[in-house]
Length: 421
Length: 80
Ligand SMILES: Cc1cc2nc3c(=O)[nH]c(=O)nc-3n(C[C@H](O)[C@H](O)[C@H](O)COP(=O)(O)OP(=O)(O)OC[C@H]3O[C@@H](n4cnc5c(N)ncnc54)[C@H](O)[C@@H]3O)c2cc1C
Ligand SMILES: [Zn+2]
Image (cartoon, rainbow over all chains, first blue to last red; front, side, top):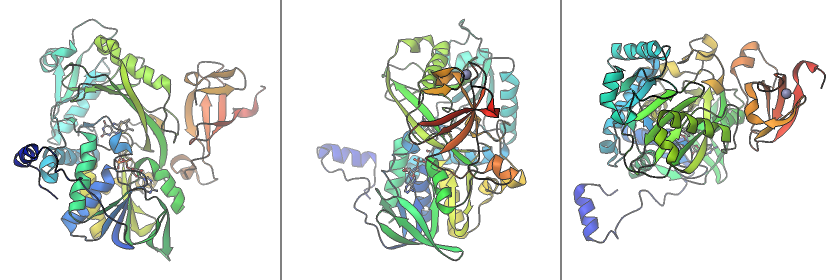
């Protein structure tokens, strides 16, 4: 792997930019591996990277049925933050956010971490105490959170014009300044490049269709390119994890639901932070402006199980309405693109990292619509789990048995309805 | 999928309906019924309500991979 630096950029420029190498290339599928990771999304690639770097595991493959970055890692709205209410969640996501802060250096690849702040707006008297409670829980855990009144918010985000008259008042906000955005594709590419430099085989167009077992151990995976022997198998298949459960005959507390997002035409700087809110009469809305200038907007799930990756029109309309009611100037923009991703929604809205039926089969899933921010911590912890056989404390609460024992991690307290998490 | 066929009201825009929950595809314990799913990408049986219409409760059978609605019945066997 060629090291990237200001100097290498300059040298490449002087050479007419003709010497760039592919980020990774040319690996071929071997017959046997120490660990086979299924799914080259963020979680699979990060797991493979840490297996090779931190645990010295030599023969690691990532098998991907489509392309690196084709799944949700390339479809999300790029928001990272750690402002979760429950301790099991906020310590984990804080670990992840800290890793994002240094990820560009760790991978020698610019992932464009932009700590522009994540602003959860309070639009009603009910919103404010809820945000205050969350903020206090975070501060007790030593995680940054600032409850802002309208004057403080005006200073932090003048372009929002909090006092302007609209359909609803803005009362204040909970702000996490270190939250922000990270370029999603760069995370996938950066991990893939770093992992392959450590000898990890990244194999695209390779779909895992079954697991071969002998007694109570898995011996390898069946793929469209033949049988691959594996000492250990880790599934990081995000929105397709339900099907993996079906493949192994294990019921999972997961349903597959769609989430859509869209981006407007690029414009000059209009919004420097990330806004998250629930406008009265609408589901959730979140908006930020990409470095290219497009407004990236998303909302809540489509509302019913789906594998189609198409998305319902009325959900988009709801997001646009929520956006225009807050920032009327958005109404003048044209939408450039809309897309959807299939999400592995769990019954309590929190992730699952655990063994799956066999002692040497692991699952890293249930990231719902919020797993992009989790990638660095999940990769490190999952790799440790797979390498040592013991789950690190950070992810102990994400065990599968919590649904049976009642130790649910339900941030919203909404009950076992994946569509409403 | 942009419409559902309500047995009372006929074909209506999807936005008039609210999805409530999926039903287990195989019989099991109460715990399994609430928390566990065996995913079948071709078949999903669900409870919906026609909230912005007759408010009837429906049992909808769909193919979540193609979006096709296979059957819509009124829950509890009312007249329709
Ligand atoms: C519209 C949208 C917006 C989002 N916004 C945010 C956000 O702002 N912040 C945030 O933190 N999260 C967000 N998320 C969630 C986040 O993107 C996901 O939780 C996360 O990317 C999932 O993990 P992954 O990257 O490993 O998944 P993926 O990239 O989906 O990786 C899974 C891979 O497994 C492959 N695969 C599946 N089955 C098989 C098989 N049998 N054999 C081989 N390969 C297989 C798939 O092809 C896929 O490439 C959003 C999601 C969506 C859809
Ligand atoms: Zn009706």
